[in-house]
Image 1 (cartoon, rainbow, N blue to C red):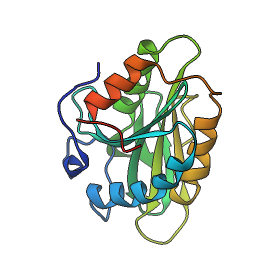
Image 2 (cartoon, rainbow, N blue to C red; image 1 turned 45 degrees about the vertical axis):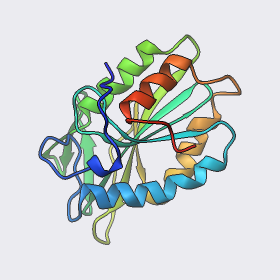
Image 3 (cartoon, one colour; image 1 turned 30 degrees about the vertical axis):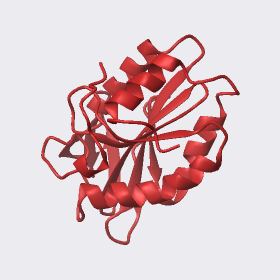
Image 4 (cartoon, rainbow, N blue to C red; image 1 turned 180 degrees about the vertical axis):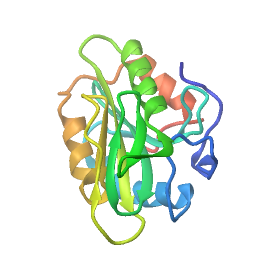
Length: 189
């Protein structure tokens, strides 16, 4: 379930408890850079942006967005060049070697949100991947319609498409309430 404890943006900190962690920079720096990208999405009709969303007792995700019947959870990392992949359970590998990170809790959060939503509403997650140094990043394949891995430069376009695909219905009130509580206050817009 969604944890309603306050988890504002200042709570995005480096900890080994973070299932997905940046390499070569801090979690708060990656969250800040991602937030700068996402602010342009606030111009879209009906978009709400939530910061510091704490789900399932995990350290908070930097962001969640809602628009109509769509909710997109947003996590962010910075990784060095490499060929990344995930297992069915969400374990993250680089060059075939497990790197001690997992998208499993993010998958679980998407599945729980889907159970809360009325029929016809959709929840998904995006992991925005910033390069920690120059070089080629081969990102994991999407996990069905649940988790997508997106280079930072493509994040706004990809998330815009996810939010627009929902039509004009309102976001379910119980989802707005849950996201508001999980982020410790009202959405940015």
